[in-house]
Length: 411
Image (spheres, rainbow, N blue to C red):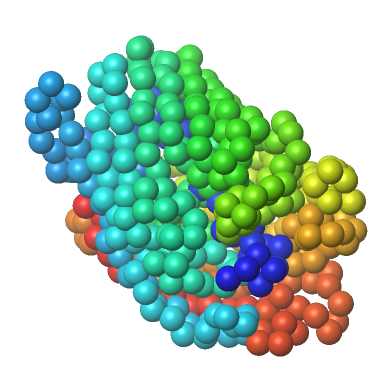
């Protein structure tokens, strides 16, 4: 699929990965990645990959003695989904079933030298964007090793990581088993997901700071700086500020780089993006409202002839019914401003000055390592000409509804 086959939001959806998420990014707080509010959370569960409050991490991960290396942990996720939607875009279809994850995690979590490797196949489903097969998505985005890094931890409150790292931006993770909902949201569609780079992590009392030098939206050009500052106010309240931006103009200048357009939208790679995220976590509730702002400056060197920006807000809520059931709800709104320009450089959503809102409801059942969940989502767009819409076979519809089911094992 060529870049021109996608709308602004759909293209950006290939470029994505926080309260509890912010602490997990630091990699410093024991159990930071546990499913907060979930009775299944356990002190022995690993903090990586970080998990939301919907699916709990395995409290008894497989481990073995690696000799001089130390204890090695092995986990993973195997899951599949089926989806039914209306107003499918050209190249997509109304009904699809596929693998959503077939991944394995290998890691060492203590000592001076640590590491994390996440390998396999995956499908990143997101609102308002076409669905692709897992094989096609994996091969055209972050490869069969989407996350992998070496970590040096000289002290309990300081560490440095280098490799393919989850982003510090946003309130939703990259892979669906980490999130409250199966599909990632409209705000996630604007954010980087995985970047190559180096990250420093430091914590002092209730504060955790993460700073990264990286390639932004997986551009392979190391000209992005991002950071995350998290304040753990008390046992139930967390406030986080995340931000990132380009330090130099980016434009693909070779055929090899142009193939990165799946993961590197031109406008977003040349942008700055900021989040303010509040999280309340007190069983049975986890509530996380956040706001997001992004700005793309005018830059004639990369054919962005007009500036553009986006304002967005989202509310993520999870209610833990009992030891097996969780109910998650997400509501979002995003508005963009900008004028048409060449190469989609001012199209951050569904056209210049377009806007959209969404609602997503996801009940989840989990028993030990097994889980199943269903989802209903709805996206509505506006700000485009009456005869043009981002959805439908003729691109003349302004809304899309989806229903999904997913089942898997988090081992």
